Figure 1: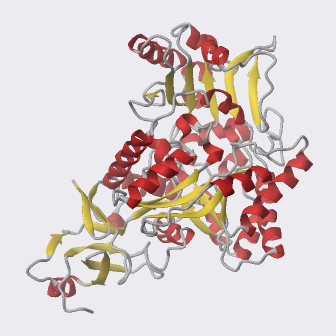
Figure 2 (figure 1 turned 90 degrees about the vertical axis):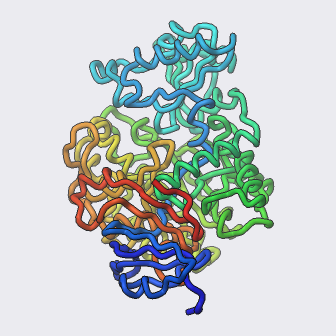
Length: 565
């Protein structure tokens, strides 16, 4: 160790290193951008010099900087004003309340301007709860904004609610055929209800005004400031490229890749961002993957520890609440869902998805595939294995994104080949009661089987999928430990609970593995990056129900204090 004193020492606390043995230390020392020592209070104090900042922890907890391994940072930034209004629970909990919010926005907007909102959830709307046959309709919005086009994206970002003016401007009527993988809900007379699911969302979202690169940069920087206040220093931006052009505000578009690259090359990116490139849209094809990858360029003039394109994102199927996840057993209301890729039959879609995966694998990319239904997951995992058999890559680190209903057989295959799964415990907490009605209590209890995955030997990352949920890792950790419902507080699959150490690894060490960065970040050990999160209380002593009450007091990124409460 150098004789130069540390620049920063945190001591007198509960330092959860999250190393292989889950070692608990009393202090940590930082010099420049790196951790240089971890040990006892006496050892850390002995290292401090005249210029060392010493933070007295007083029993508080130190964690590795949190790594939210599936967070749409740019899109999350553009869900906030001035880009969009909040129509999510608990801000509004009824169709009537959403209509009032839209009406207010319409009165304040210039004539004919788009009214754009995000976050509505049919599982929390009073009218839908009172009558399951009642669902949001274009007429609800027409009554308050007849002359403004309205586009409201739901909490999952897999469904749009539009009014008649928006449908008219976008040419959507009784004769419109949705794109592959898309669904247009219709009344008995064949007219659109205003609900567009999966790939059909693009029919409206592509018409929305597009933010400038400067606005996108501001949105990203605003999100990173928020993440610092939550102790988050790294995240995966899961899908940026030509396949995201038609998403809300182009939230997954190449423009945001450009904005990140500019910030990084100018030294203005204050987080570690791993990017999955998005060459093909939902409903896309292998040709889309080839063309999209040919268009995308990786920036070469920025620090790869700050910004790096490490993989390719592909959409496999939809989401269970929309009944668009491809399932082996039918939903309670009937139907099995489907793959969301090009093809006129399920067999052709399976072939297309396998080819998309093969193309990206052979191009040398890690694959992160959005897939939620058990039948779709089995297809994807088999495609991973087949692609690797044809073109072996010893450390590809492919992974299943979401993996809601992943089967024991697929878990075994992932483990055998060193692949992973990225799950969303806060979404489980949010929708578990709703899923009881969609797939039945037994399947709902199994959804996101974290314990089963870990027991099978699969590496599990946990993430927020913001803006689907807030990037609150504390809620995610509590949800993994408790497996309770947000609405009712009832247990939902208690057999899938995990202890604190496993939950924390899913937000720190395992995401570093997913990022191909486990040799230099993700744990508190000498020579690792000095990314740290300080909580206001001793985490090991907390009841899991109280974890969400813990506050972030200090965040260290790259050796610098970037947030202090």
